[in-house]
Length: 165
Image (cartoon, rainbow, N blue to C red; front, side):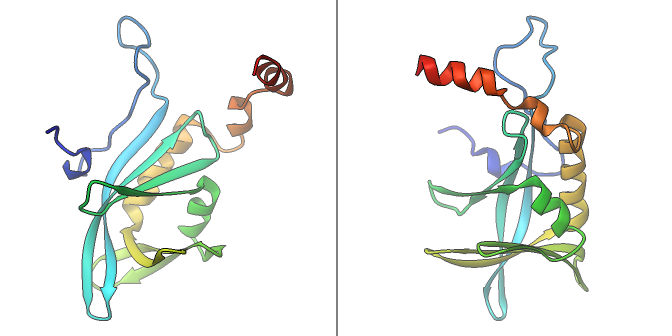
């Protein structure tokens, strides 16, 4: 059985590249990915850890994907805007299913809290704010702020795709 990529240590960021690409392997990265260990509140006095894959793809320039490895064969994905994550590093951000805010923990220092709510349950998670911020900064090096719209298909390209449909 292949090794689960989420069990890999997260001390080294991963830069994913598309398959194929240039013959010499010089293809530019099209995604930024890193596995971080988040703390999750399991009970009032019980905290666990969840390996979480943070992934950003230039092909979907407005969104970030967090994949939570729950220790089972299935994984839980949450997709929300990169802007929401950026804002949550500085102040309360989001409403409804996803809320983010910065905090300071005496044990762990600067943290980012993520409150997630779904029909299947709720979770309160805590991440290292510096680690999330460093990962997010790499996404902005891949697709700078204000440039995401340039990566989306034009109206003409969408019309052609729909016509070929």
